[in-house]
Length: 126
Image 1: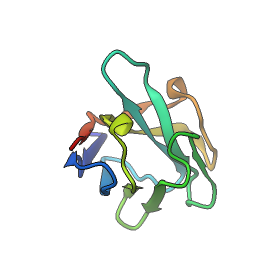
Image 2: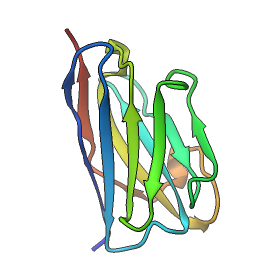
Image 3: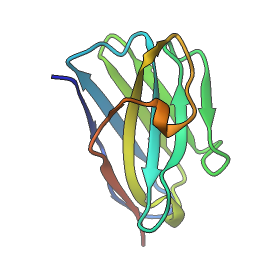
């Protein structure tokens, strides 16, 4: 059974940090682009960051550039999102996604991702 499971969300004060994890089971992440998206109430799903198959290429949205870092450990079949200097506007459900239809590629749009996790809530508030 193919699954992506996110963890690491929670409540944090502005300026704080969290590290999210996305663990895959039922398939190997080695060859595929993985992304983190987020969705806040009443807003569209937003691409936060994506990485290619080996972490050699990454992309960040302007809203998180310089504060968030996406990384992956293919030996653990896991992708991470380190989030620093969190702001209230970062509050959302964070979801990871895998594009298993393109090997060794880089994917920037949600419809191209075919596997999704259930999400983890991140709340930034004092």
